[in-house]
Length: 137
Image (cartoon, rainbow, N blue to C red; front, side):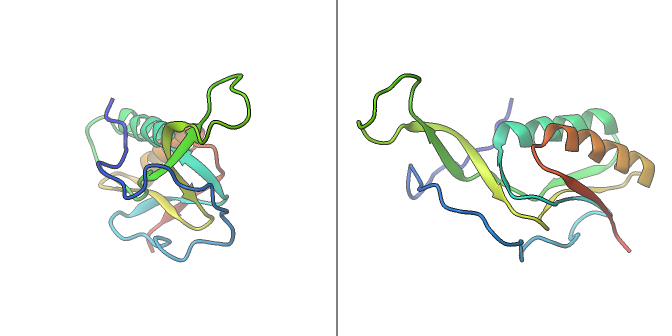
């Protein structure tokens, strides 16, 4: 399983931060004819992106080209179960991408619209957010 994670990070642990507003980058179809656009704000883990990617590729079999437009580079840390207060910040558990409404998640090219629509619907089922199917004009 080729899990997505950065090779090297400037800071090993990040502060939580707050995601608000809508996305202003990566909102248009750039590579493919069909895309999956986010409608909510959430952290999408590397495992969820990988599960969605596999669902799309499994449905497409060998046809079409897929682009993943997001990359999980935010380290999410957790402390162990039943660890008392204090003792610093927990270790990095996984990496996530903080997504906002309007962001393009996946793009597809080289397949018919019905196939693309169904493949991206499979991917939506693996993601923790509501999404929208986008077609190039």
